[in-house]
Length: 218
Ligand SMILES: O=C(O)c1ccccc1N[C@@H]1O[C@H](COP(=O)(O)O)[C@@H](O)[C@H]1O
Picture 1: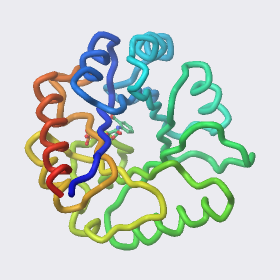
Picture 2: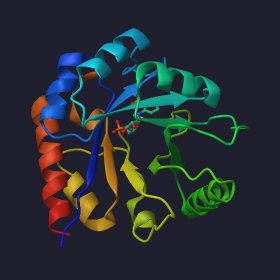
Picture 3: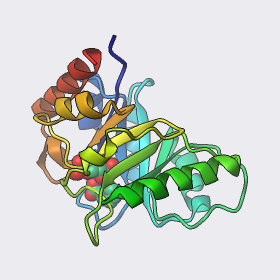
Picture 4: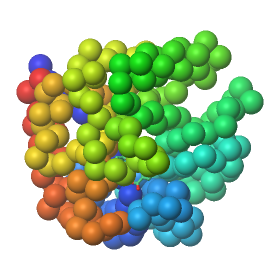
């Protein structure tokens, strides 16, 4: 049967590189606004990347610890399609005009139960996220760790919204991850890099190819 897996290449810092990644078939590119990340991109550069992208490639912002009101302001200003958030203070307003992807870090089974509870609470509050991203838990780091999540715990994960697998994915292991877990989407930062913040386009090409072949054979 197969299914259409969605692929995000995260931590892009250069407009020309973003265009090439889009041409290789990525569905989304990630723009990282976390200043401590080696993949940080300042808003003016992010704006140049968004302007350069073809219309069917979604720019997604990564925000760590930002109040949602500020996340919304930046998303609106830059024309982001979705926002991926970490450790955001709770949103008080009902309306949230962007596709929201909360990122959760998983270490043990209890974290998955907590994730399900969190998603149910958002749904009950009338603010279901567009998707949820699951990553590895590494103390003191929010993401971009190069560590894989505990896949064995995720084999039967069935959240009420689409889910995205992140953490330590590479061109070599993404097919295995897709076959085993059938996530709605996959997300990679370090696994396709030539240097921090710069992508290796051959690795990007391989990553996209391997993920799509595996999903089409599921
Ligand atoms: O990439 C970062 O530096 C980063 C920093 C803080 C929060 C999120 C970050 N990136 C996200 O983490 C995942 C996994 O990264 P990796 O593939 O293990 O290197 C990545 O897809 C981004 O969404």
